[in-house]
Image (cartoon, rainbow, N blue to C red; front, side, top):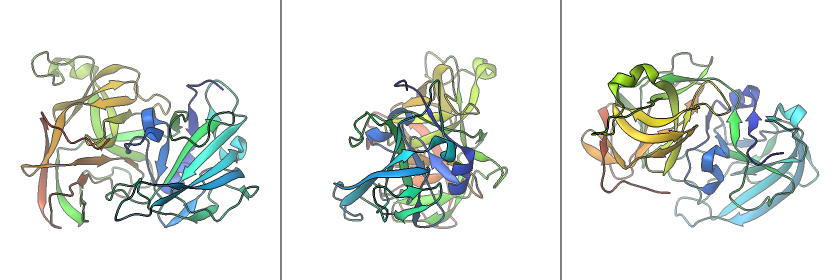
Length: 325
């Protein structure tokens, strides 16, 4: 198995969760899309793979007042055929799944199928307060260090994803202490296909402003943006090809501004602020969803919004961008 071989997670597994992200995390486990977060519809941590439990362990998490200070790691020797998982350019013998954010009620030697409960989900100090409960999974070869945070293989979501245009406006339909959810953009085909908020990758940018050049619009590729814009240092540009998604390097455009630079599907965000109704907020939480909604999620622990409030989001350059990781 080569070091850069991508592990393909099948559509059947992804559809059982309904929402996923490869990049919406500041932690090294997600570097270059090397893990996937799966957001279920209940509080049960279900196995994303079939196989035999190799090990469970308890690890310390960063201390946060809203979260548990213990995290759990579940290692599963993957049966790729039963899991529907493939690995590029090589066989998948010796693949191990690393599952986090589940308090294990399984033991080493237990056999699990895709969708079997591993235990209840937990919120540890690795969570930001605006992040919903999810199952984190990454993959390594058995001979690798299975316990360190970084070093997992790239993950590919084996589904086409549809980019949905958004003009930056919407009405607040849900609020929490640290976030506000908008009613737009709307999902074009709820339950039928995965979709997310669109950006574009161009081959050239205006030399003066850095913004994508209108003259090159015909060379732009529409993508789904994934990750924390721009409160995490990097994000993703996902497209129809589940492996690399975007072959070209180039500037990434969103809401009419140059927000980052793509290298394949990886995007390094530029120094920008996200602004909502004239006030800077922490950022936008971007993901891929099956529906029924893909409304924009504003990350705003320092700015309160009310349900029913009309919001306009814009992007501006920044000398002091918010960076959480």
